[in-house]
Image (cartoon, rainbow, N blue to C red; front, side, top):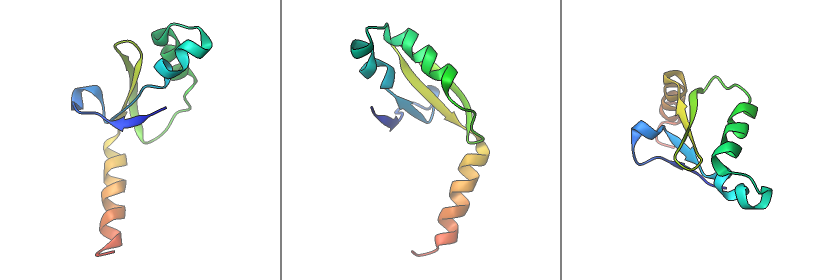
Length: 80
């Protein structure tokens, strides 16, 4: 499984190919499997939305608060 930054912001902040990687082993359509996986994800205050693209990529869109928290952490580290 991979979770990567997306090349295009329209596709979210991160994307996962988990459904496509599991499709053969589970003998399921990757897009249908992605739908199940997204339904089973627990809510997170850092994630604004999750959607499915193409054959079964799972796209994650972060909240503004998630970005602000990360920036605050980086600034707090100073030169370290």
